[in-house]
Every structure is written in C-alpha cells, then in structure tokens.
Length: 463
Image (cartoon, rainbow, N blue to C red):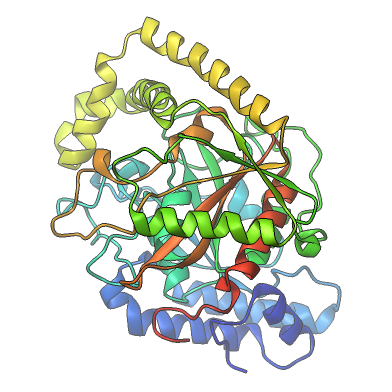
C-alpha cells in the first residue's frame, strides 16, 4: 500500500496504525503524483517537497513512540496561498506579495500541524482571492483536472484542482463570495464553508472582514468532517472568532435523512437564464433521491439570489478597497489588471451605501432563519452549469454561480457533487443549515454522496 488517492483520511490513518504503510511512503507517493501531473494542472504555487518528507519521517518516528495519535497524523494536506505557513512565501498570487515569508503559521495551519498533518505546499489562488485567471500574474492559472480546457473555479482554484487531481484528500480554501463552494462544485470536490466565525482567520490575508470564511475542500464528506473537527474552535487572536462550543461532526454522518425536512427554495435560482437543463435535472433528481430515502421536501421562500448578490457586492467592494487602498495608491501597476479594476470599484461605494447594505444583510439573514425554522436544512444551487472554458472565458460577473447568499448571511453551507454532465464535468448542489449546525449539513451531504453514487466516483484519470 503506497498511497493510492482513493484511500480516505480514515483509511490512511487505519493503515498507518496497522503498519501497512508509512507517512513517508504516502507522502512520497503524493509528491510523485504532483510532479508527474502538476506541470499541466498548475495547482501548486510552491511545493515544499523537502519539508514534507522531513515532516513525514518525523511523523513515523512519533508513531513508533505512541499509538494514541489523531486521525490527521502523518496525512499530507495542502494550503491555499493566502494562509501563512511559516517559512513559505504567502504570495496571494500577486507581484506585491512575492517576497513575504511569514515566521509563524496561521491559526488554521497551526491546528492542522498540531493534529499531525504534513504540509505539501501552497496552492494557487486568484490574486488576493479576488481577481480572475489572468496572464499578467506571477503563476500560471490552475486548470480543471476533469478537462484542462475548463476553469476550476475560484478563488480557491488550486484547492479544487488539487483534490480533483488526487494530489491530496484535504486542502484549505477561503470563501468570501463562493470561493470554496464554486471550485468544489466545478472540480467534483466537497467544499465546506462553516458558519462565520467557526474557523479562525488569524494569519489569513483578508479580502472582506465581515464576509471571509475559512474551510476545507476534500475528496469526501467524511474527510471534510474530520478536517472541521480539527479546525473549529475559538481563537482569541481573531476578533470575529466564535465562542460557540464545537460539535461532534463525525459521529452522525451515517444517520441518513429519514424524518428530516428539506427546504427547497422556490424561484431562488430556478428562473435564472444561466440555469442549464442538465443542472436543473441533476438538482431535481437529488431532491427526489432524498425523498425516496425518507426525507420530506417542502417548498420554502427565500429572497431572490440577486438581492443577496446586490448587498454582498456593496459590502465586498467597500471592505476590499479599504484593505488595498494604500497599495492601490503607491503600487497600482503591481496589481493584475483585472484585480485592480475590481478593487477600484470600492472607491465608488459611499458610507451610506455600505451601511444600507449591512442593514439589508440583517434582513436577508432573518429571512433565511425564518425558512430554516420550517425545515432542518435547505437544498439549493451553487453553480447553475458546469465549469466554463478558459477560451473564451466569461467575465467573472457572468459565471453561472449562486453563492453570495450564505457568505452574506454567514450560514454554514456545503457543496457536494451529484454526478457528471454528458460532457464529463462535475455537477453539484449546496446544503445550507442553521448557524453552527455543521453536523446536520454534513449528515445530509453524506446521504447525498451515497444516494447519488458519488462515493464510488473515480478521479478524472481513473484512479
């Protein structure tokens, strides 16, 4: 057993405990796969092969001294290049940040290391997590392993690509307007955006303080649950970090959906001209499978997705411009053209606009809470079609996505794949829950993974 990518985190941990493999073997296999394939995929901006192998050998030595080790001990993971990892550059895919090398880990990375995880390196992102694939940036844009002519989504583009390519079972992403959920959906990964404040953002370069979320992308729902168990919890270094007690995210995964009420928003996305018949069919099939498994789907009312989008864009534009204002004045030409254009939109947002958007956000959150009072979870859309092509690539404002809503309100959401299009590209749905009820949305996502057969889906290369 040398580390096949189909092994789950739990299976790898079991094999390590039983002495059937070693962390060194698993890590060497992952690095070999990356070296062979990433020349075309560009998931990594910085591969720390020597550091990963040293950490793997240390993990094996520690295992020989103790049998009581966490599930992530000796498991290789990868990190979006907006998280600080001590000793590795945090480039944010920008010429402005190429030389910044932090001395300390961000809190999420520290928690992964404390759980024994091995850091393979840093993963591609859109510039400062806000730009778009562009030739004027330091690193090539990540590509979608399901079809290299298609984008992986973003801004956690390398995270989605790394999961789909089988480079790792677990990657960290960030989500401000869909940047975990979109690449997960288009790359056939599971993407978990926890409740706002559930996972610390300390040591993660901000995009918009009140919209940013940190979370995992993974190969399976169980992998995501294991990751959240490690990542969740209060951090006094993050002013937005919640003190809400951490739930058990793994025990209830296999409980199924019998007796649960699934809220399906009406006209939240269904009337969008971007919604493809292929996606709508997959969405309806998923709802039907949940009903056959004993869930009770009901219609619920949510504001139209455009209302969330309008509020989110004002908040995002104002906050990201404030963060970048000084560099935009002093080093404007060091930004990518698309990034600069998007950041400068914030200069047009007045304080009145921003405060009105915050007020609207509270109203929208109350509407979502009211819908969730009638059901256990919401089942809705993330992306309304499969991943677009690079050439011609639509402007990011025209991507067929529906993800701003729950970044705006802060509710937890998980993207789970539900199948492939006739062209062989992934399709996905989104499960949304009450604040801090990640255990429930993971339970429903696990049922979807099983009912649709995605748990048996091979990677694009057939492994």
